[in-house]
Length: 296
Image (cartoon, rainbow, N blue to C red; front, side, top):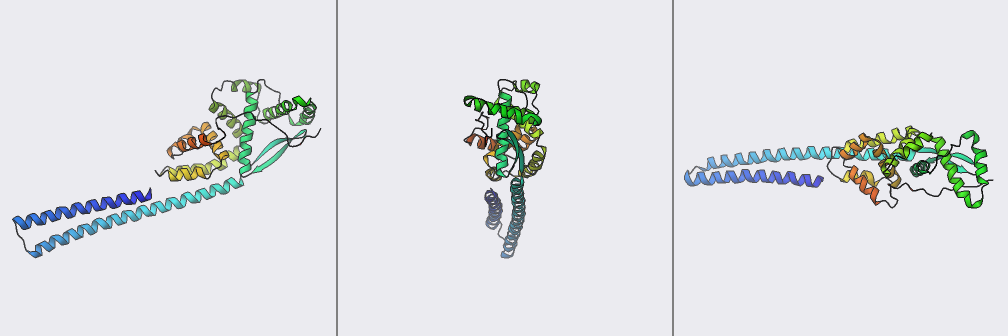
C-alpha cells in the first residue's frame, strides 16, 4: 500500500513536470517561428522553466517526506499496541470450577489455556440452557452429598449423571433460574444462543471483559485511519482460534464494538476467519462431559 502511494506521487509529479515542459517548449517554438527573439530572452524562459520544475519537485519531496513520517509513526504505534496486547493475553487468567471426584474444585487457567477454558465454559452454559428440563442448582453447601449420590448411579447412566451435575452447577454459578431457562427457549438462531451464553459469562467475569477489550478497542480505533487491509489481517493473525471465537461473541453482544470492527475493516475478515475454523463457531455442540478423577 505504501509503495503504491509513493508510485502515485511520482507519476503525478512526472505528469505535472511533463505538462509544464511541453507547454514551455511549444511556446518557445511558436515564438521563435513567428516572432524571433534573441538568446537572452530564450535563456530567461528556460530559467523560468527550471525554477518551476524545482518548485514542483520540492513540493513533492516535502509531501513524500511527510507521508513517510506519518506512515512510520502509524506502524510504530500499531506494533507497540500489538506487543502490549500480547503481554496482556499472557497475563490473563480465569477461575472456573471442574468436577474432581465428588466435589467441584476451583482451578485457575492462564494465558492460552484461559481462552480455551472460556470457550469450554460457554459450552457448559449452552448445554444447561438447551437441556430438555430445568435442573435444580447444586449449591456449595450441599454439592458433596448430592454429587456423591450421583456417582453411585449404575455404570450405564454415570455419564448422564455427570452431565446433570455440571448442568446443575452451571445453573448455580450463573444464576440460571427457571424463568431464564424458559426465556432461553425463545432463542432461534445460533447467534442468539451464543449471545445469551456470552452475556451470562461476562456478567460474572467483568474484570476480564473490561481489561482486555479496552486495549483491543484502542487498536481498532487506530486501524480506522488506514485503508491497508494488511494491518487488520496482522491483528487477527496473531490471535488463536479461541481468541477469535471470544471476539466473535463480543461483537454479537456489543453493537458499538461491532460497529468499531466494521469501521476498522476487521468485521468481514473476522467472519472469514470464523468460517475457516475447523470447529464451527456457530455451533456450540454438547460435548461429552467427563471428570478428572473419580473418588467414591
